[in-house]
Amino acid sequence: MHRHKTLLDGKKKAALKAAMHNIIQPKKVLSYGSGESSTWSGFYQTDRTSDGYVIDRYSPRTVWVKFSSSDNANSASAPSALNIEHSFPKSWWGGSNNTAYKDLFNLMPSEKGINTTKSNFAMGKVTGNIKGNGYTKVGTGPTSSGSTSLWEPADEWKGDFARDYFYMVTTYSNLTWTSNGLDMLENNDYPTMQRWAYTLLLQWAKQDPVDEIERARNDAVYKIQSNRNPFVDFPNLAEYIWGDSVDYAFSIDGTSTGGGGGTIDPTPDFATLVDCSMKAGLDPFFVRTYEGCEGEVWTSSTQFGAMANAFSINGKTADEYLMVNLDLSLATEAMLTFQHATGYNKTESVKDTYFQVLVTDNYDGVPEDATWDLLDVTFPSLPSSSSFTSFVSSGDVRLDDYCGKNVTLAFRYTSNSSACYCWEIQNVKVTTHTDPDALPLIAEDIETPQVITYDLMGRRVPHDTKGLVIRNGKKILQR
Image (cartoon, rainbow, N blue to C red):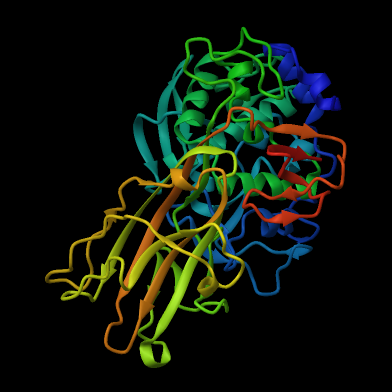
């Protein structure tokens, strides 16, 4: 059995937390600040969109300022409007020269104003004296000692910050907490968080489950620090330490029986494969023309999401696919949902003609060579007095017929000189129920090279690829 399996299996509660503490220490941290091998060069790898924007989890603009064209993964500087924020404030342990101070799992790019406003307050539910920036709240709220100054992240990041806090109190439980940290922490190895705090964070973690952005950041930090946040890799792990499964022994292969009260399945069979607003870039989607060339019509808008409009293209003629590869090989059920709007088609329906939602199991780089199935999607009614419709839901688009396969999903946009319309798409989500045997493992050893290895998009990758991969029908976390 793998070394980590031996260390973790059969442990509960405090013993499980202590074992995780010993496993997940960073092996390397970058220097704090800007420049070569610095925090900002780390952010360039962990918090940069495909088109160069900085991901700011504290600002209502979220993605609104770019890295410099001279920045790279080895050396980068802070954009003038941003600084480095410790989501778990450094004043809580009073140190700036230790690993915790420079751990990328606790560091995020932040707009300077909200960084100052949130100060070194504890994170919690803000109910009074609310201020902030319309996105991150700052004010007062309940703790075990009464109403206290707190900050509260936006709903879309609550689970991310909760899992970061689980990581911090596990990795650095040996530190001595001071200052505002004592509003939510205790100076002990277990539970380290006060009851109100871990109860709230467990709730946030359920309401905002792990998504692709969080998984990608976990993988990127791992490449830098050689350690992972296990609360991202194993989303139900926190329940075995603080929640409804504390009376059950943990098993890394998911064979333990937990979820006392039935609120958490110890062998979760629900997964979110895609959760993309499209406002922060098109990743994990890519664009191809009908012939398989790089596309130019589909772009990302911070206000509207993915946008396709060939009005400025020569001849106004386009045929482009906004695509994503989906690994449904372990799924028993799958569903697609999104919101979309159309524009300039006041007298002509675009549903299933100029705009199509398609899926195939034989895409091999050239859309025209694939055999596509048309999905039944709810489209907006024709625009009336305005040029654009309101955004409407696609409805629940079932992908069950494609379970057991690796498939490609595509939004196909076509136009010509007499019919050139606009399509806007946002909040694309693909969720699945999977085979209960398809559970994450931590792999320390390289297994038989003859076994083919795939990434989570179903693409064949080298056998020693680090991070989450699929081999022999199982998801493997490969060190």
